[in-house]
Length: 325
Image (tube, rainbow, N blue to C red; front, top):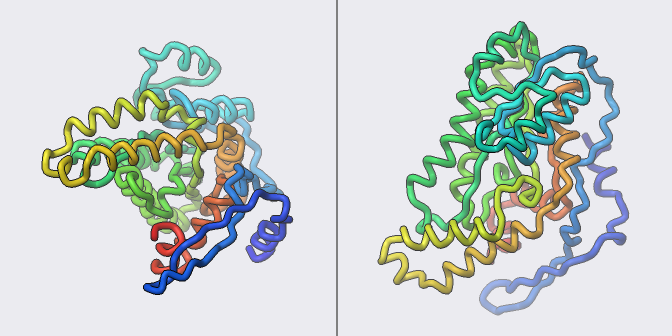
């Protein structure tokens, strides 16, 4: 572990674009500067996976959320590696392009075809949805909708197929997010569910260890561009609907200008994401095939990796000073 961290940090940072973060200190208003290396989409998640892997053979893997994004690419990649892939597709009927592109694997919109499989080696809980909005702008229905898919969907699918995984001494790979390790403004519905996936995965890993089942979590950074979760039009549509449902008192107190700035921040965040999903696909593949898979995988650029270390290892007062104040 120490060797891996040293190798990661010893890379010549002088080659990366730099960014200076300025903040005020205390009541005297003294300006301080903190030098960071800019998020230039240099993925730290591209580890060199050197340990041996198990032969794939005809092992079966179930991947949820294969309509687009990570799941779609993941299903095709795992099939090319020799796995028998069951691809969970919500929009099987409506999105003919996705289902036809997955014709080489086994599209499934219910559990029966997988349950009849003699052995299930791997489960990849990838299905998820997302939204945005400050707490006061977000309805309880939205919180419940996101949790139903991202959190309870992960729990429900895992419980359904865990007996098959346990008998095969296989793998469970849960898709979380950088937002499962650190919170961010206007993302509370999503963050809540991904923090929950992290806790669920830890508990499951403890329980499954004596039984020979390995549980891993993949925590991608900003790959919104690659996952098709948002487009500028979708962001504006969500914002319009959200504003119409906001209580009058909140509208009056916060104002339309603040609301529009929130939507603009989200649109900017989405436009800055990475479109290359290879690091995520590699992480999932390693978790399924390696004899010693990692507990957590971090396919993300340097900015998010450094921010995650600061938020999770330093006192909150320090990380708040850097990223909030």
